[in-house]
Image 1 (cartoon, rainbow, N blue to C red):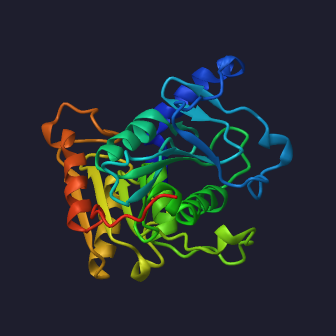
Image 2 (image 1 turned 180 degrees about the horizontal axis):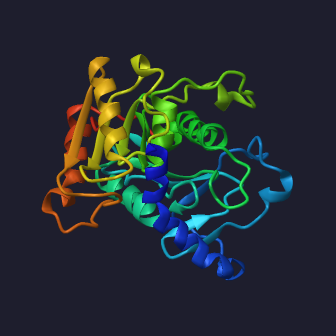
Image 3 (image 1 turned 90 degrees about the vertical axis):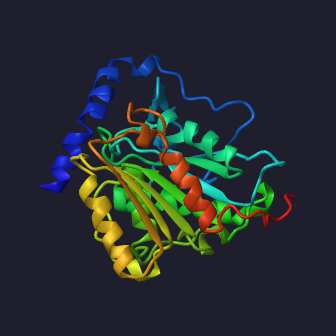
Length: 302
């Protein structure tokens, strides 16, 4: 029942994909701003993706992107003068049908840059897109783990402390963060290179109206500190947010929860007429500072 409510909650995004399908052939692949670098997670292609699909162009329009078969990161380095050594991988939501690329990705990255945090926005494979053969718990979660490992492996290149690499997910992206942060990694995954030998568990997690996958968590004792935020009237994601908070709290994991009154799903950074919600990024900044994640003990970039 909870999964059905979750899918219904995101039906508006599904309609956006359906309505744009006839225009897909005209849609250009998304282009990052020139100053930001695009990083392919697997130079030889992601495991489980056919070579034939790997070369297909991504499809983007307005605020979203889909048809992702070559997972990648877009790097948003913090300015050298304000860089504090923290790094965050951002996982946009979109019901695993698309990625809400701007409001839950690039805009979040630039907001984190203002905190001195270097951000990386992840394009992960979409399990619920029409015709997809990917899975959330398999392929998409593998992309999230690989992204965290990649940032750790290249931390010195960005002036990041490899012990201060966090993950931040919105809605479906929040599910993926919980899957990698609060749950065990599936056994038997191949290690393709040295990057795959590094830890994929983030040092801290930020879950913004996360969906129900991965909750209740199955490796809660090893979970990193968490910041959770959702609307109290969110039909899909209020309940799993509170449930995960209770698990973390009872396990003795440092965690903070903000549930906003009379608010629903997908309020993002500045999409509300409620003053309290407009200030939730300030509460995140406070939490990051209180946890020492913004302390300027950064290594020097090469």
